[in-house]
Image (tube, rainbow over all chains, first blue to last red; front, side, top):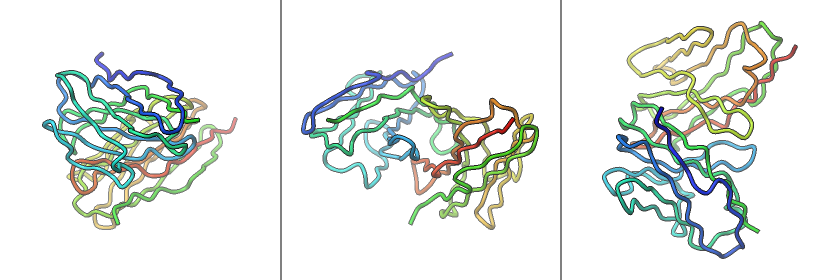
Length: 114
Length: 111
């Protein structure tokens, strides 16, 4: 069964460093998402991406965040200068039909900022 | 603002009893309402969803009801089992291409 894959599974970084989290969505999906989950808290929407551009973003997704689909398969989330409060699990998700289809989540990338 | 409210935050039920989790949403244009189950350290997984053109949907022990007028929807789990213990999130489409999650309900099934 096709699934969303994410790398790395866990990344530890120093505050102020840049981090890139990578995702490979399901191949025939058209909509891509990043969500964040701080330990023990809710799953928070960060950004949605369709047709090679951001379609929606939340207040969390400030200038320190960016997303890119550099080729036909990868979908990346970049945090330019990490802060302690960026420590969380980051989930990538993809969807084949916007707003009416299931979100398929990857297993997540745990980011720890020291 | 755009929001999905979920209650209760924790719920303990005896094995075999029913569990009900309730959510409300703010955007009357929302048309898709999924429920996700998240086990400790795992990704959220879809367990059931409902679209705005129906009022109820059932899949074995799990059912979801939707009241569009009141803008609320509920998850019902009957004959609960130990493996139902997890965190459950409701979600709704809000304001375009985003699905917003509630804060989650930690369900404990007591032996």
